Image (cartoon, rainbow, N blue to C red; front, side, top):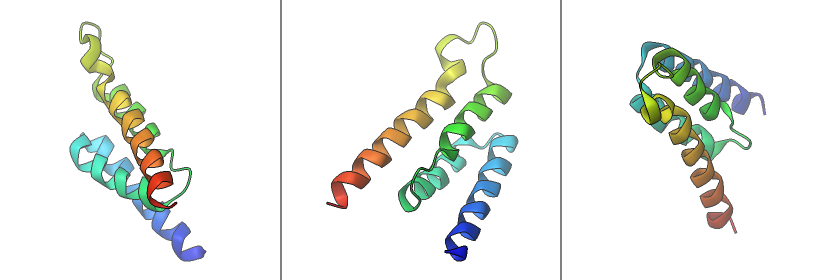
Length: 88
């Protein structure tokens, strides 16, 4: 149990570092891996919101200012749905 918690914390730290650096397309696959292996992995959603807060949500950007949040929601839904289908 402690090993899984340690791995989850390491993945979260890597996600935070990648989002702060602006490497969303590197953070997204790592979030996919975390979402697949851990239940209730909402950190990818928080990473998308943090990315948009740092680099998006600028007046005049329109739809693309919220792209990180939208992509993280879609990824979270796809991973959680596919986990329930595959594990049956």
